[in-house]
Length: 598
Image (cartoon, rainbow, N blue to C red; front, side):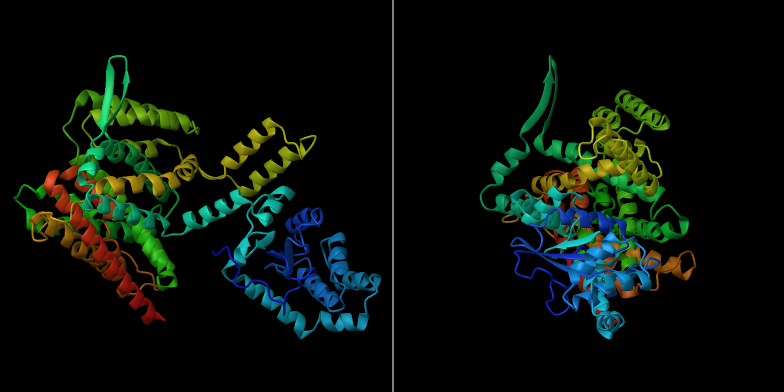
């Protein structure tokens, strides 16, 4: 859903009482029967110098509810008819003062009390011009039609701030902090932003490594960093801290997303989960078989897990950039497939890419995990105990010889889930808390805590943790991982695309991924095991299969666990080349399929 208007100020159709010369343009969609609109009207009335003055101009448009039982359309037509007699504000204020249920008799009495020309008023009330005005106002919303009331747009952007005078004034005046916040919000909410930052981090690493900084880059990656207490010391290289430490937070978020989809989402019901799960299975098995076709019986056979992975951020970012060329059902399918694929990748990393095994540390790790599960069974919903125990779990998983990022997934599994609270009940509780305060403008600390507790019940604990960490993961952790793992020496390297490990990775991602995904989906639909959405063509499915071959960060992550030295550099370069090829091929196929569908 878009949060921007399809059409800004229009001098021909908009009601702009104070003129359109203001520096800031505000479009206020009014439903005279809506209690939320009435609340916002009170705030606007207390700030006359901000509205219709030199700072801002206001255009009033009418929004009609889907179920109009209160005469909203009649009130809007009455305001339009009064506007035609230059009495807009009088009718506007009179309707707000009247009870929020409008009948023809009540509207006529208001018009008579205002001294309007009644014959002209009746004619304008039922005129074609009034119908066109209402239709134009609805059309100007575009994709923003389903946004919540009160509906105010400031310079074309839907206002989502607080319903208080100061918040609204700041949104209009746009001080530096507000402008930075708006720019950040635009960038972070752009679907392709995470992928763009990853690309920039990768390019930076390649430039540093190939323009004279390779020795510095390698030395920096190997810089030791650790903790010591008394005689005990725990030290790892900077690269290791990022790959096994910070990436554990990334896998924590992946685990939360997987759990949510299994409990509440696309993977919660068999009929919805069967097709993406089968597609993910084919997209993991076939690339591994393609890799083994070139590496079976060699020293590089253990790298079969590298082409199995899909980079969900890149794949979904590319699909978002393609816009309406990609049907919504295909985006949902690929999202669920990528999540199931991530689960498979996590299991592969945990089982096959550890470094030795130490039973004592493993037993301690399981003891910590059991304690976390005990807290979950006891319905301890506070997130802090799980995060603190998660640090201990990470240490013992690392010491046990398993891949330390497994601790992130186990922590996500332990964080308890619960059905979200009823939103209306939470809203009623919040209103009761505020009503119980002596002064609603100065809510006490205890009331604030109660409000926070009530609002937090709207989503499960894992959601709040994901909200807190997701931007850090997308714009810091993953870019750091990309920078410290893609500084490959291309100029003068010994990379050979015909080397078994390189060829296996490239063909596994470029050929194995689409073949496995599309092949198993085709078989499943022909056997009647699952059904493909009527919105999705087979060319679009093939395009999505190629996009799933964008392994990038996930494939590089597995390759770092499977290889070392020159082989690792070759495999990383193979991943980058194959991911770029898969992205271009998948995008072209989806564009062509979208044109054919149109």
